[in-house]
Structures are given as structure tokens and as C-alpha cells.
Image 1: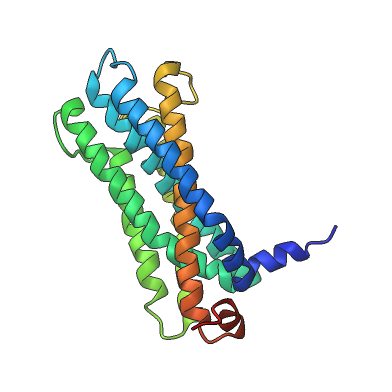
Image 2: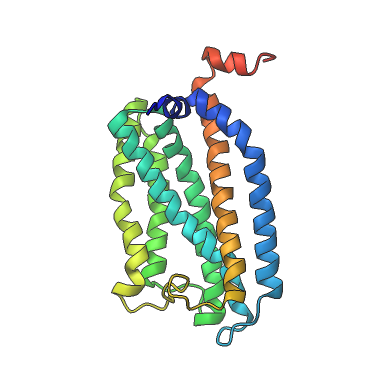
Length: 243
């Protein structure tokens, strides 16, 4: 089996061209899915028997919180790939994953607080799940800062990759915190079939839409990082002949 196509995609030039072809469709699909899922969830899903209408924030909170964890794992994977195979594109994706992760984690903490006020009677508690999510935010910030803390880009990339790999432990804690400790945060409901289908469908639609949106943003920001680092390369001049 020939793997030349994989090497082409793994090169900055190949990835840039692939992303340029896919991004319009990714943004369109994510917009449609998020629009349908959000309108359905906020406006037409039935009222929860215990939480009333306050549970509707979960149609935003659950997807962004899930993507925050996914973003960290992907960042760590890109760091590992960069350390093992020394691929430039992997370190680029690791770098842009950090600020994206900050945005999704911050959104998760804010929407979680909005949900917590009517549910728990307070905006914030030092709950195991919430505290570990706050640590995730600091880890994203740490990886981003560490990558630019060295004058030598290779040293910065390696240090940031090591930190991202160590931080995966926190992602495991986030997932297992509601099982390991007695927390206020409710346990996972989707996999246990504890959500009525009329409430579950818009949530799944928003989950899928958020996945595609995250990948679209990741591709777009990686393109910008490629342009920044490869701006003097010949293929850039060929791709933008008028500049």
C-alpha cells in the first residue's frame, strides 16, 4: 500500500491546499447543524421534569465542554507526533490548538456557571469536575506560553509537547471525577441512555456541529500559522501568484 498521499497531507503545503478545499463546506455544515440543534434544543425540546428550562444551557455547555477535552487530547497527540517524527505541521497544529482550547474551555466554564446558579444556587463551587476544568484552562495557557518562551523554536516545541502530554492526566481526571468523588456535577447521561430521545437528538446535532466547527477553526488557524512560518517558501509564492 502506498502512503505517499499521507506524506503530502502531512506537509504544510499539502495540508494548506487540502484545508482550502474543505473549509467552505465545513463552515457551512457546522453552521447549519448548530443552528438546527440550538433552535430545537432551546425552543422546542420538552421541559425537564427536575431542572425545568434551566437545563437548556446544556445544549451549548455540553458540546463546548466536550470539545475542550478533545482539543487537549488532540494537542497532546500532535505534540507526541512532533516529538517522535519531528514533523513541522504537528507542532504548528499543537500551537494553534492551545488558544482554541482556551476559548472552548472558557466557554464551558461560563456556561457551566450559568447552569449552576439555578441548579445549585451558586455560580461557582470547587467541585472536582469544575476545578479540573479550570486546571485544563491553565494547561492550555501554559502550553501556548511555553512554546513561545524559547528563542529556539525547537526547544519551545519540545517543552510544550512534554507539558501537553503530562496534562493528559488531567483530562482523565475530568472524565472520571464524577465517578471517583462525590461531586455536585451530574454524571454522564448520554452513554447511559438517561436522556429522552426528544431531548437527546438536538444535543447530538449540536455535538456534531461543534466537532466540525472546531476542526474548521483548527484548519483555518493552522493555515495562518503555515503562512506565518512558510511565507518565504516558493510554494507560497506559487499559491498566491499576485502577491
